[in-house]
Length: 121
Image 1 (cartoon, one colour):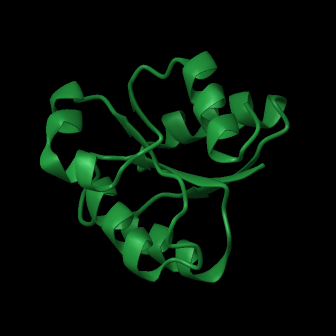
Image 2 (cartoon, rainbow, N blue to C red):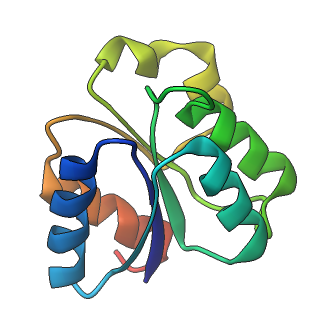
């Protein structure tokens, strides 16, 4: 399994990367929306995990770009946010995520969502 974790907070990046790697999930990190969009255009991922609230290009914008420009336009998206209200926005529904999770991360739910995205339930 290969995921792209889009997160601007370095501590969150390190924590999620370590936990997912322990589950034998290959994790690539993008610390900005611009970098995430570039990576989604250049490589295939089983799922991007998108932090919604980021400066500049946010997770919703990365998701929209993924739906239009990624190598795999149907890539299963996982949304992650510290602001649960953001998950009720129309934008969240338009992206049709396989999971919408809140921080602090529940790793059991995140790992289950990644496996579902990769077809391994």
